[in-house]
Amino acid sequence: MFKKEGFGTQLRLTRKNHKLSQFDFVSQLANSHKEFTGLSQTTLSLWENGKREPSFLRRIAIARFFAEGYEMSEQEKKFVSKTKATEIGGRPAFYPVNITDIAAVDFSNLTEKQAEVVNKGHEHFYTEALTETMAAFPPAHYTVSLLMNENAIVGHYIASNTGMIVSFCFIDNSVAIKMVLDLDGKFTSVVLPTRTPAIASFFQDLHFEPYPTASRVKFYKGSLKDLYQNPFFKDLLNNNADLVRFSKAQKG
Image 1 (cartoon, rainbow, N blue to C red):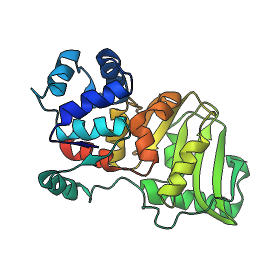
Image 2: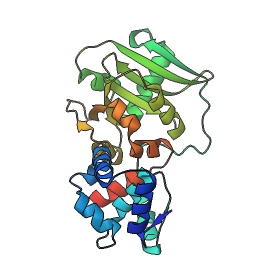
Image 3: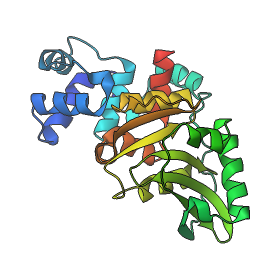
Image 4: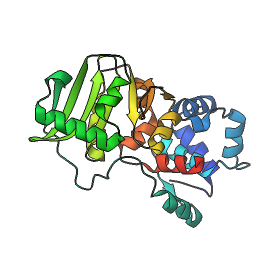
């Protein structure tokens, strides 16, 4: 368990327990999150020896890197409480939805009812008509993956065969996680839409780059393989969005 008091000592012990040299640890941190870009072994040594203190965001991120907990001080708790209102783009999964099927349908073969749900879902999510979003991309063959709960559509994503994902909508966070996992193995790199500034900022932190289009929706491009291996993305998949909120709050 990490905490502000004695953080450096705990960091040194945990790093060594994971058999990571200072060089390897610094490299992995920098490759996983832009907050650690430019971090040197010298600075890490100062942290571990208690001669310098990393920021709150970095302390939290390091704890999450090791999948460890972090015990917050009262002052830190006050900061965290202010970030709870940061919108990240999905409802908490209080009652997780059971996915009974994931149906892949050619976009042109959607039934009238399916097309209505997909179009309404996209416009609700992104405040832009699906036709407008798709018009911002070159013509392509699109497949719609429909996440089903019995006969009800509870999420969908629309992807070209090159990994252009023009729509990614879900009823709650548990469905979003299943959608992300369903992408595994289908693409090497992807272009993803983002719904909120916090999620857009988070993807940039994980080394996804802005992908400019004429759409009002913000898109980001990056390696899907690297994303799945990123410890901070794994943290988000475990329904822990605190780091997303903290990072956005720090940036303003």
